[in-house]
Length: 262
Image (cartoon, rainbow, N blue to C red; front, top):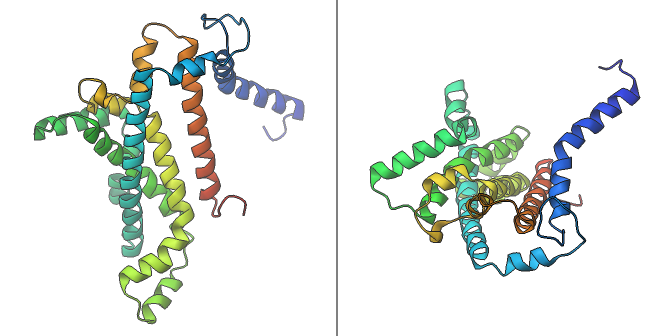
């Protein structure tokens, strides 16, 4: 491939990008379609976005998604950061430990969803937003831990030893030395967890209770799309995709080691 002609490489690259992003581009374009048909362009209009924000079911599902995403992100970021720091400080390496930590990332969503459903049912827990939040914490914790641990690979532990030699307690060292250095990775992990929580459907579907009180936005989209794709659904998908792309972009920028603009 290194010896392939440049035009051929560019053609392959263009074909790959077209395969990946052309369907998304069509979806975004049709969300501004004036007509009610999802496949026939009849003119530019933003009326579907106006109707979207006047739909009470969608607004309620969006609020539920926001609650789940924010709370699960806070908890996953807290526990994931502490887990990453604890593992690195103890210097406990090994395949078994790595497997335990990153198992939620490797296990298929459907398997994890069934396992969580069985666990909640065994404990007799009533399903609702709280079970979705707990399930998303389990799912996102491994992602936050992996992002923070990647930052810890280049962490200078001599500053921790210097802080200890100067008489700083462990909590002070963690708060004044370790966390400020890890803050870009922590924020990046939080943004990644938030994005995954907003987009996640399978685990939320299995661990949600009955009724609209625990319906998230992906679940609402699934319920709407069973009756056919409409420009309203395209508009909703465009907004969700835009939020996800923005959060992932910020996460990648921060995970490179600096704040945006640096």
